Image 1 (tube, rainbow, N blue to C red):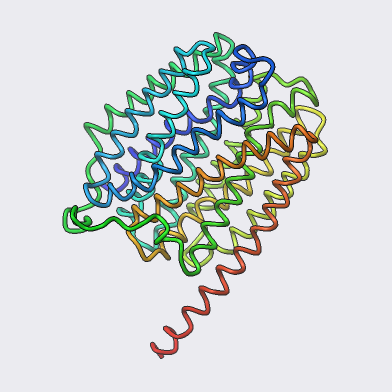
Image 2: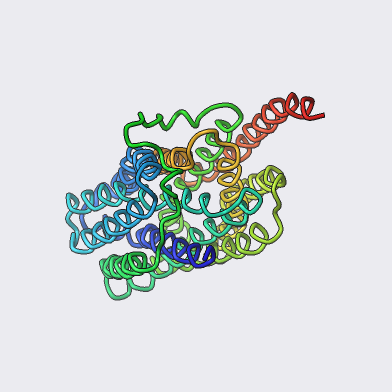
Length: 396
């Protein structure tokens, strides 16, 4: 039963991030058609506004799922996501409709991502939590893998075609969930409706707050990369939307293999910090190597190096948060999703600004952020060990 439930929610995450990834290779071309004089500005804003809305609303979805259950929130989120794809597809160069689509997508994204993380936490025991989050990460990685690849391929038909395909896929996933997805949160484990819902920041405490900040740094650097890579490639080696899709396809495949192999099969409870540290160093190396790339082949290889590091970081951080949190899984997952969204607000804006100064600066900044995150990991481990020492003394 557990495997069946995991399979359904992993498919939902896959669909969600296919839709998110589809936009990456075609967005600059679509915006260039609508507003050729302000391409970089609208790329940053289009990516950031989606995440800004998600940042505000994700904890609301997470807290609501703690009270009424995960299933209805997930279903609403998938249906809303389908509507956002459809709206972008019919926008056909209209900036107001494209922005409206991004707002709608951000509104419902937290109902899918943060609540599915809480769903997986519900159905996996602590000792298997990292494996479960590895599956979450693998699904997200595959979504990013398939999304840009599909977006680049379907752009050969038209730049709008990928969004209609994503809308149809989301609707199919919705129908599957309606008939096959059971509720994970039993009535006795739900928060009482009359209880005051804790603030998202109630999860931002103790050693765990450093994990949230670490996740924010990782999200900022990743979003800055996504917002600028195609423009970087266009100036360095005349990259096309299809080629950008191939680059992210390779990166995502490598990341998915790491998450499905190393993370799921090898990492045991307590080993997460070591793998996070390794992932941060590898990500920094990937960023710095990108500075030297002057061809599609070298850029793809260096992006894959970054993908290996990122694949080690995300599921391990998520697993540690779900293990260490002292609030409901919905609230904790909602804050995790919000921190990711906050990074995706700041990342594209920072990346676009740095890119206008010098096209190499976004990747230099990404490498430095990855290395700075090692200090946050150190603080987490120090405070967590200090907090556990009295417990160990009392037990002995």
